Length: 310
Image (cartoon, rainbow, N blue to C red):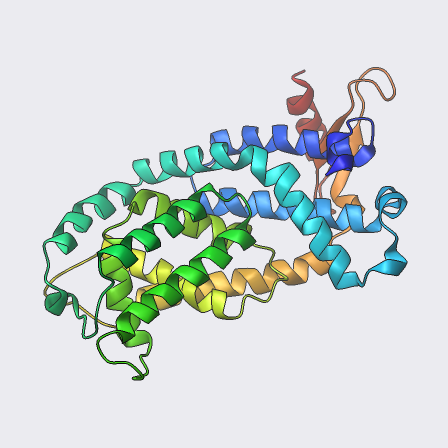
């Protein structure tokens, strides 16, 4: 974090240029997934650079930490110095994209339908959270929305879903409940929450989480929450189901494949993903550009011209 705030350090200048680049990129994006993926890719590249840099070794003794511990330290620092200052802009951009594509309107309309639907018609066969527990769950959702770290958000989501499971068991203690029982209750709970915030949170977690992180239970609850939101978005009383639709399952599989590909890409990432360019005078007005290894000279020149506005 200290390095990121030090504009005199190479990493500090990378982070500052990256934040400017991210804001410019977000302003022209029309796909929420592509926007978040680009942010995650840049974070992974920053992480790769820092892990290989002498600047980090001057602050943290590699001999005192395992490779996994060092990666966790750097990832946490990137959340603080990159995602924290960009969080509001990211949410604003996601809100704008989903307002334009109609997702938020669909959620709001079907939220009213579900609120007017009985638990039986919703497919609920267990107890649902009572008012005091519901208030506790909604407070957790509020805390989750305030968090800037995807890891922290997932941790809160995990605790919240366990509260929902506990509520389900109240009517029949000791009975095990499965995914088919959980989905309708989760939809019941989500319909009583701020669905706009929940949609933004779920996307934020799914796309900005470190692809190398093993999510465990968190992955199940995250994908189930995503599935519940998709079911609310396309809710139809006539074809109510207690299972994730084929379309939602396909979407989750695509997300899992993206994580796998991004993890593989991260292992191949290097400091060559960044090029520091000066204009007119050496080391003056330096700008850092993200560039692929196969970028042609003509394309790189065009990128430089756009960056320096010449």
